[in-house]
Length: 281
Ligand SMILES: [Zn+2]
Image (tube, rainbow, N blue to C red; front, side, top):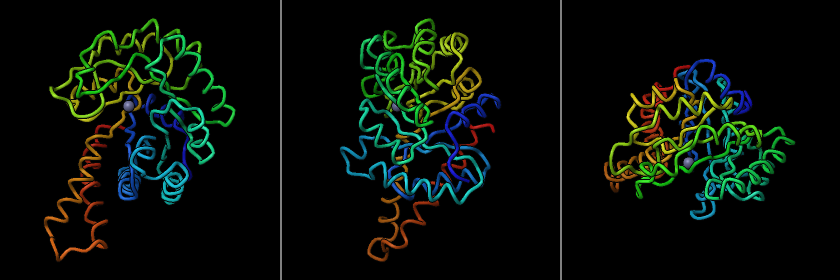
């Protein structure tokens, strides 16, 4: 099957009262493992590129990344979504749309509300003209290393979310309800009441960022209270690194670079089989 629109996958998640999991990937092993396990479990999934990994780390650019995702998605029957994570640069978003991303995130959460609305609206107009979905961020999901998940002034306000969605016509919204990006110093506690209030005030699927390290019982509750897309990056990247390290340490000079992909993919797939159980399609 070719790629399926992210808004279509989020609609399926909403109907099943669950969340799809969106995995940040940087390389072939990660993308291959996500697509393969999704097909094995028959659960829709979303693959994401985080622009900084291209800008700062020289990982694949949108066109190279898109070629890999499209090629692998064409071999399976399960719906695969394809999304550009956090971008605040319209030119970069255009590059991603041209490359074949079917969904993009415009992150104006660092801007004052009015400017976030103007920027989001502009991107929605452009992206929708190409039949591409848009995710925005309201409130601000910061960084776990700064304990931003505890800063209540950064949380999304239900009444503001209602007005924001109405005005921007965005397809999904990332909410700040007690999660943060990176490695948590203490176990986070999601504000599930606030989530339920945001869900009642809006009619778009909600997105939870900073998914690495949130206890499963909290996630399961969040998935029934309006979260339909759940982003995972940090723990998946760490596992990729640990698996490469384990291969090198296990085989030392007897190892070779050609045997490494399968070894790493098996580790990644074992993790994904467990993680994707959270997604109750
Ligand atoms: Zn994020």
